[in-house]
View: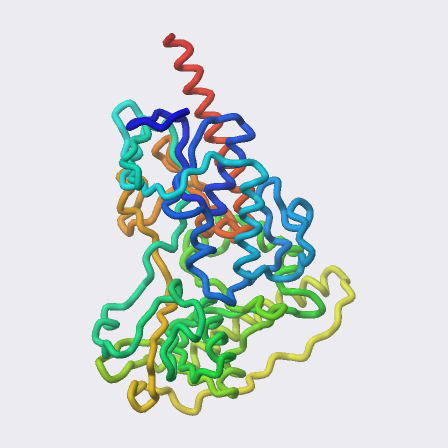
Length: 431
């Protein structure tokens, strides 16, 4: 079909990452006409918003795109390894080639609104000109990493100090010579900290409240144990925290060099300077809360808690697994630094790694709450024909990752197909 100024189509998918492509896979199998609109190139986040040494935190065996699992379908040779950034892109490119989705790249969605007849108008911009789609259903798979969280006080810092957010960080050589302040100790923050330390940089790390996880424990990767225990199958409906689990920060560890856990206390012994949560900044210094030791203790409590859950599982099932020594704190702060003098510590750059938030400014359908967050039941909105896919805890922990997106996409596409058939039946009666 040749594109015209206005095109009518059953389904529009917004976003060409693994979520949008997974939905397209199922719609292709159901022979439902649709289009996948991607602002940049497909898999843009993996191509452009990751640093050079980035790799998966979860093992490759968890990469389970629909009809295209790592190993079985992709032919990957290292199911217990951790794919590097370029390998992730290769995996996604192979997935796209496996079913040839109706993908349109370089298309920016500028507005989605509902018409009185229940259909949706999807306005887009391209280099060739504007194009409007009229769709019966819309899948929003644009992810939640659009806008980096940067505190207002960042504007007060001396402009001679380079400031970048985690999505723009590539490698240590990108930053000017000198010490670096990394703000945030989630997965991105601690891995960027390690990347800089390996390069010989003096790193100062503002430690937040993120929890940490074991990597290998009692002879296996901790994620292997958790999978066998049914942890990743736990749905948000059954989770003790309910909807509140969406606000929880992911546990930090790394897949770098075969995978290892990250104990910030050990990094402190190796020269990384640790501070509490960053609370403010002026032209000459950064200030911090007196919560460093608490944040370290809380992260360790999570770490130990995961080990204890695995221990119970092993004992209850009579599994023969090697014993591990009890966790010991190798370092604790003697003081709680209240400030960091940029000049004295020769700070040349600040890396902000305190999170992202989605941008739904183009979505003019009543499916967001007063905080701008989408409201749905397993991705299905109350407004018929609107769906979300690829967000964390859409249904399970794996919903925002390679592990659970295929299952979520299949579920949503079941709803899409049912509504599509109803619409076709209604048209047949009218005609």
